[in-house]
Image (cartoon, rainbow, N blue to C red; front, top):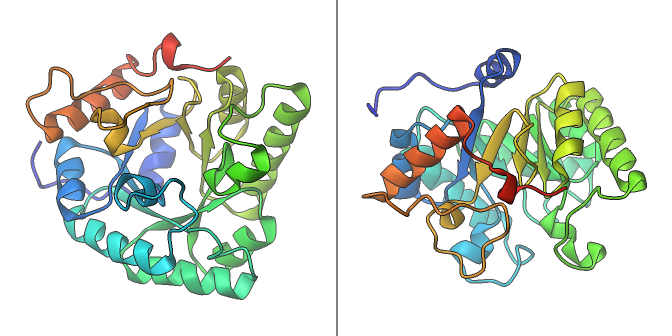
Length: 266
């Protein structure tokens, strides 16, 4: 794909949702990864706090700091000019106060991000960041920063009570001003229901085929993860390069061949 691409904005993602066209995100953590993702045609890049595990070798995302995130966000912004860029607010960068949340969100914008991601239904924080003129991607379902509260990594929303709570949170998050919702590890039916009820784009990871967009961790789709999750497909198989593997993921999401039934939670 040509390097000359039109910038993807929130308007692009909304238009894709209205026209039932799938958007495709990947994570990236440095300049070359971002450049390859850009060339492969992704719509968006999440500079995820998953870099703590994929890049820094931690067991969880908890040790990741704002300084870690900003350094990697700046590198990604240099490498990817067209994709919509999202900076993942790390543990304890927004939980303490609205003021600290806004200040740290602003650091991401100065680093070149279009949007910041906040885990959980933290309505006051979302409103405060949005009121400051910064777009927010909210994250519901399995939220890794709260993995200890959940008792480990597990599918969320399987019980009627959990499903009702996630749907209610999703509506409240949209009403608070969030521009995008990320659903992680939730049953396919629930994710599709939420996507149909919200006006904002809904991105899924381990959330079935009914969301408006898909995202995978780059290292997962390249087959670099020792014990990949159920929803992961290795797109490096049969690919000649990393860029080709990312492009294969983009094509698979766009043509509906990913995610398949075996990648989906019920």
